Length: 386
Ligand SMILES: Cc1cc2nc3c(=O)[nH]c(=O)nc-3n(C[C@H](O)[C@H](O)[C@H](O)COP(=O)(O)O)c2cc1C
Image 1 (cartoon, rainbow, N blue to C red):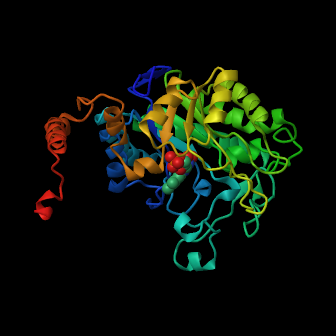
Image 2: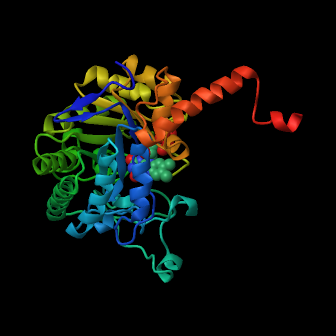
Image 3: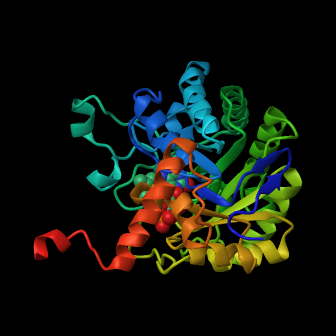
C-alpha cells in the first residue's frame, strides 16, 4: 500500500490517494461557477491527482463565506458544476465537491482583504452583507455580527437545504461529496460548546449538539444513495477554551459514521476569530496527521489528512505507516498542479505512463535527454561560460 494504490470507498474507486483539498476561489457571481473553475480544477486532474474536491459551495445564499463564493443552492447552478465535474472526470480523476454553510462566519471579505466582516463600503460597491445565522446569538469574535439564532423550523429547512444541494451535486456528476464540518462554520458551530449555547434538543451535551449534523448527514446520505462516498471535514480540536478536544471528536466521528459518513477529513480550528484566545495547531509539516492517525486507529473510518504536505516521500509514508488513507494537498497544488505526476517520478516510477499521453510521450524522451546532459556536465548556463 502506497500513495499510488487505489482506494475504494463504497462504489467509487479513487485511482490513487492524492487529493486536492477544497479551496475557495472567490470567483463566482451569484454562486455560479465560470470557465475559470473548469480550467482551475481540471488541471489538477490532468496533473495526476486521484481526487479533486471543488471548493466549499454554499447550500444557501446566506451560507456563503463571502459574496463571490460558489453556490449550489439552486437547480440553476447544476449546469456550471456539470462542466466542472465532466472536465475532471474526463482526465481520469474522481470529481468531488465540498458543500458548506458558513453560519455565523458568513458575509466576510476575501482573505486578501483580511477576511473582515462586510461593511457599508462593501454595500456601496454592490457587495453588501446579509444577516448571518448560527445555533446561538454569539458572534464569531470581536467585530463580527451577532448571528440570528436558528429556530427549530429553520433548522429543519436547513437540513433540507443540505439534502437538496447534495442531490444537485450528484446530478452534476460529482462522485465524492464532502460536508464542511470544520473551521467554525455552521455544522461545526452546532458541534462546539463554544458557539452552541442552546438549551433545546439541538444544544447542551454532546449528543444534543450532534443532532443537527446527524440530521444533515442522514438527509445527504438519503439524497446521494448508497454508492457515493461521503466525507466530513472536521476540526479535530477547537483550540479555544471550553471547546471540543480530540476525544470529543472521536465520539463525534463514530456517530457520524453510523449515520452515513465514510471519510473523516481531519483539519482543525476556526471556532473563534478572536486571535487573543485562539491557540491554533502549530503549522509544522503534516500538522494534522496525529489527529488522523488516532481517529483511524479508534474509529472504523477512512481518514484524510491535510496541512503542509509537500513532499512525495512524506506523503507516501503518511499512507504506508497508516497515518491516513488519503492525503489532501491545498496550496502545494496551487504551486505545482502536476504534483502527483512528479511525485510518482520522485518515488521511482520514471515511465511517465501516468501522464496524459500527449504530455507523457514528449516528457519521457525529454527526461532522458536532460539526464544525458547532466551526466556530460553540460548545464543551461554552459554556453555563457565559454
Ligand atoms: C485559498 C484557500 C482556500 C481555502 N478554502 C477552503 C474551503 O473551501 N474549504 C475548506 O475546508 N478548506 C479550505 N481551505 C483550507 C485548505 O483546504 C487546506 O486545508 C489548508 O490550506 C491546509 O493545507 P495546505 O497546507 O496543503 O494548503 C482553503 C485554503 C486556501 C489556501
